Image (tube, rainbow, N blue to C red; front, side):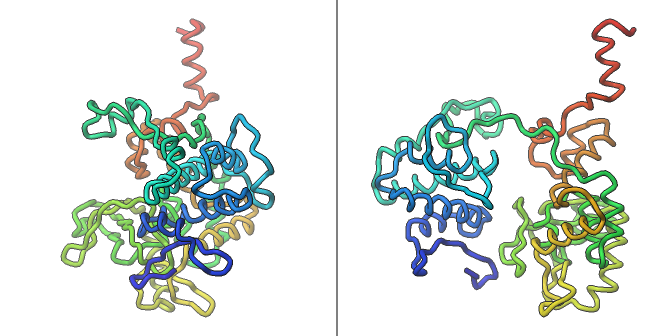
Length: 383
């Protein structure tokens, strides 16, 4: 549903277009956040399964929820009945299962508490665990914490994938030659030279760009841009991270800051003086559609993904080119250039956690000369 302020709200309706009151009540608690859309898609899948199984909120048990998680792709030590996510749907991966578990726990705790039903399920979901050292470090008064909320539906956390999907070798110059417009060339350049997410890039407004030295915002001396979460963007794009931002004397300050390379500035001016000047409307957003009935209107994140996919095919690159691959490639390149300094990569890539860098990127090259030399010294084969 489109809101008067420009944002969108999500709910679940039955085939007769009546609103599912349980789902709507839960999703309203996430109004204005990206979680509402995500939870709506996960919840509708579960509710369809629940209808097939003949279950309701009043009758469902924790065992039934484990059966659903198993049918959706989790490894559970029990039979879960008929397969659920049949082709072309795929079983949920580890990250998707964690989101599904959080969604189901929140949904059923909300329903059981509000309606005062199914106390057995509510008690089974409202379990707690001992805090880890990481939990204590994150909390303001972590030293006094004695327990933390737990989710019995969450799959066991395994080892993260050690090698994230990077861009194919030579992808950047090949993509730069395969694109058809200055806008598309700018997108490839900006994704290559930063760790921007596609939602943040397509959600940029012109006022967010400070592409000169000593900008009046005072947040960064070199050319940079501010990624600001705006719920009401007309193209539906929104930044994933939501730090506070504000406008002071007409200047955007704070938000998530990314430094801009000379190539980014050059591609920006080429785009602005050609395609943007010719077609842009009065909405003030950076990326616009260049063809079709909505020419000049804001360009969506899905359209940008499609452009990268098609450019990759034209360039003959293997696999599917995705915006996330640019982010992984940039982080890997920064680590290589900084002698594997994770602090530099964290700041340059705007990563929220050092844990991600350590688990996914912080591993040595097993074929490097340094690694082989260290082993030989340990074995006493080299002085």
